[in-house]
Length: 308
Image (cartoon, rainbow, N blue to C red; front, side, top):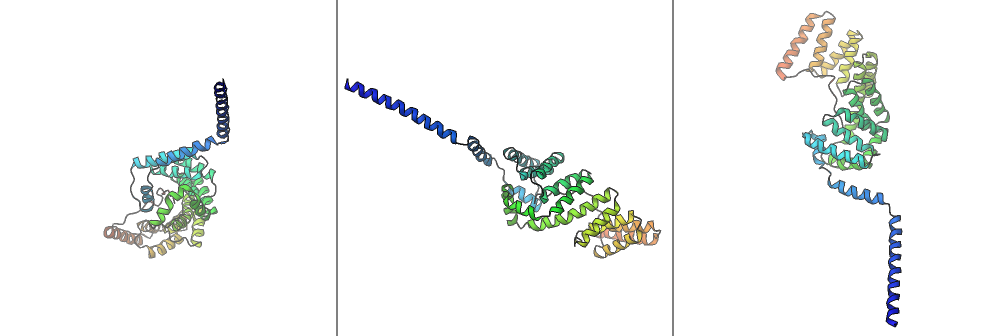
């Protein structure tokens, strides 16, 4: 009888203890952020799928060729990043950049637009959106975003790159390879002004193109020789032939073998009925082409996209 009471007491204790443990477990589970746990699990799994960034960095820094399959891998990766972190502007920007290199410019432009909406005021985001619009012939849109890029300047972009996890994945290695990120951005900042001038020229707004060139040169951006060519072309369209010829003569003193400038000079001389002088320029042009193999370049070629 005594043993029976003891057994019943132990069963009662064990039953109550099990209920208590169950209640404690349920209370603990309720306090956990299940989404955070799941998100961290996804991140760990996702990071194992991350492609090697060495090829991407070498492509940006030294122009190493990547296959379409490699670009497809990067696109898949950044699409996953976008799904995981839909508020991260850099994710859309990196995705857009990879899409441009895979020939998917229309899709890329949409992702650049999302990037500038997520994080306004970042130079590269605005620059590549402007390039996408420029390459597709939307020159008014390109002017708007190039001007936005130069209005904000590069400083905020530099701070963002050092804070962004996606940029930190690549930018340290780029520095190690001798890629001067600051210099690249400074050059693109200058080129933004040139591309605004080119856009105005292509729109037939020659006065505005000339004004932008003059502003760029006043700011010391004359290292890009296309500034002078756009100035000469704009002056010619404005029928200011003497001034256009003067700009080209000065330019050819520095770049005597530039076929584009020689072509324009020949055309100007013919316009002003100076046929003997035009014949002389033609002879110089043929000699330069034969001796050095120089060819005329497309002044209004498609622009390259930039990651950093």
